[in-house]
Image (cartoon, rainbow, N blue to C red; front, side, top):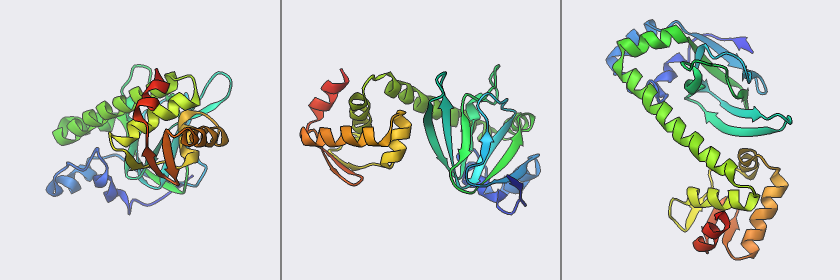
Amino acid sequence: MRSQSAEQVHSIFQCPLCNSIPIDRQEEFLADINYSVTRYDKGDILVHQGARCDKLLIVIKGKVRTEMADETGDFMTIETIKAPNPLATGFLFSADNASPVTAIAKVDSVAVLIPKENVHFLMLKYPEFMNAFLSYLSNKLTFLTEKLRLVSFRTIKAKLAYFLLKESKGEDRFQLQLSRGEMARFFGVSRPALVNVMMQMAKEGLIEVEKRNITITDRGALRQIMS
């Protein structure tokens, strides 16, 4: 990773944590941040699993993947974070602020790093920032709850049934936001295994698959798989 100038730092105001800062206070907000800007090459690690989280990272360019290793050494992708978005917000103020995940740059990326103490100062001075931070944490908790629910299913078929029902948002036809590879990493399974199960479900008449376009033809059967 290499240090970089702060020419892109204004893009933090497109981030969910900072987009509510009034335009007429943005320069004041920037002046109050003790930030550094770092560029990461594709494959660089932004955060190691087990490392202390003492800085807020806001990815302002690129894309970052977070993954977790279990006791056997297997890796599970937790999420993909696209700029502009924060990283590791949930652990910054925890009593044990060791990161449970490793964050890896999927492409060349740039991040703004803000010390924990400075984040606390910004919360006190800018209520908009504090409210946005708390809202983001709440939304992240919802995401992690869904991730735990997915992991609780024992079979790939049950995981996929749950995922498709959730992604459909009640519609029969919808488009997947993740590629097959990204879905496989999200499930913690191999891509061929996931594709085989998806094709099996299509042959059984439960779904229709055309690239990322999915049609649910038997919603009741998908729910039955999960039970």
